Length: 332
Image 1: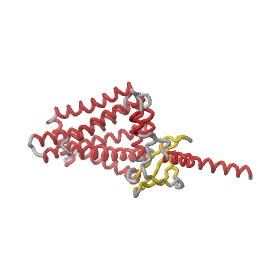
Image 2: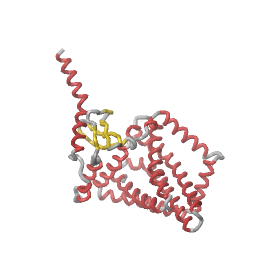
Image 3: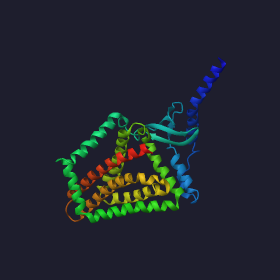
């Protein structure tokens, strides 16, 4: 009986260990013991900056006024979440563990995470049907085919501008990738920063839900945040804002996704990069067409139609990229 009682006590302590480790980490994080200040990162000497930037990405400073319920821990695999609130905004503080080591702590507002319905089998099958019908309609007389042909004709009619946009943005990606060979530690810190942003939205929850669900989640994120919010919306302001934004984005992507870091996996990931980056190039091209047509006196309306057609073509590129990337993630 004593042996059974001892084993029961040991088991309960073992089960409670992740919560205790996470609770202590959150307490230290709230006190500012885990997070470097942004000023420290910016003023750090070159040899220390990469490590500080990586630590800043893994342990972003808690927002001022954040309150956390340390007694409401919820354990999901290697993650422990605590209910939290920032004024009237609710959310959770997430602690990511590797064994007993704390790998990451961050605050995730309720509206930042992926919508729960995207993680359901129904959403996965819905994305399968969307992909099949969209592709089928491209080969049948339909508005979808008409828009595709008009978008391709637009590219052919303005191939000089299209080529310029490709050379500029792919060139900036290549420049960033080359620079990463000389600064691998800083590039790795940037990679951690980007990965942390994806982890903050809860993308990891889609990994075990099957290929269609993962592909749908990837498409949702790239379409809503990449193509629409930081593509189409700034392109509406006569193109230049989206060109500047994507110039910075492509250089940063090249720096963080360089073969210097990915090694042989870069070739496997290359189709994803080509497809996704081409989608953002198309919306940038559309924004520049909007600027050109407006400047030439053809009217904002004609330029807007060119932008929307480029946006439509870019969306289909993202759909193809989502399926390939989901397969790629499953393979790795």
